[in-house]
Length: 418
Image: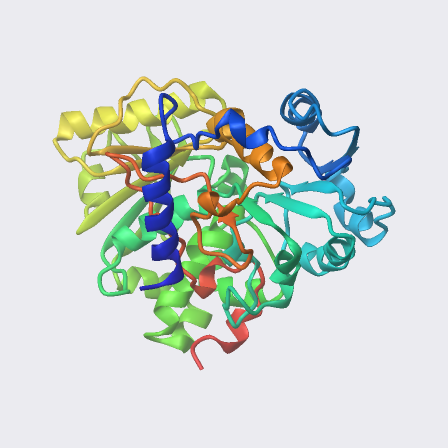
């Protein structure tokens, strides 16, 4: 039994005894905070735009026994320079919350020096970030031995807010059969492949040459470059490494993969064949037909755009009697006209967590309580918490697969397939 399974079982049992009224929110007894505090200083370093509100509501207003509060807002456009020239003198025996929602792998090496110094001063450290830990790994893909995540050895609790990576990996795993994927159509909404790229870019060549462009660090489309195409390369390089390097798109077509993107209204674009199609076309059903079809979208554009895509796609399903799963990452918590059912699955962002669960974790952290109750995710830190919880109709994986395609670093491409 792996470490993550034990974590999930332990957390599930504990939460089952503790939760009440608030869905999945770990309850913390008021008695837990009656002891005298051991920390006089609390520091909150954050690149989050709403950090000041959280700082005041969760920490300043609630931690009456902490005498000195320090908030330092990190400029999102200048994170590297900030970390390289970190100048804040943190007092011994302090509480430290360090938040990087805009995390990149290379920040890890810089954070090691900062956190090691705080650790040597007997500080209690919470790290909050917006990148799934697997994405921070090097080509060895080892959660517990990687220079980019060594800084987590000095952290008391790591709160990981990246739900989207788990969302994508869950869908990809559902599409697989024995670790391989074929004869599958992916219908993407316009938030995953931007319209301006569709108008000015020839995707068949881009996908065929993806391996070489990735090696040069070229990024054309964030979702394709960091999720879908590295995943396809990883899977098909195992079958035909040379073809995957030189003609990935042709290899995908050979194995029955179709990638179709919404361009607005009832219109779609075939990325592999450079063809525009419409839901109104008589042969649309034949065009998307496959052994399995998955539609994927997000709330990253305005509500009108989102509902336009969902409405047209669901209307097509109901009129054609051809139903396939639509997976929707509703990070912005839009009110959708469509209700969740077996063909429409949603995943929420972290707003509920930050408003209802995080304050309890913060209080437990500040009071010096045992934080192991919140350890529900596999990771290098002694306590890793991800705001994904088991539910009656839950469909998201309660784990993240440690696979090379997930890594933000491209060094795995050099070694994979040899």
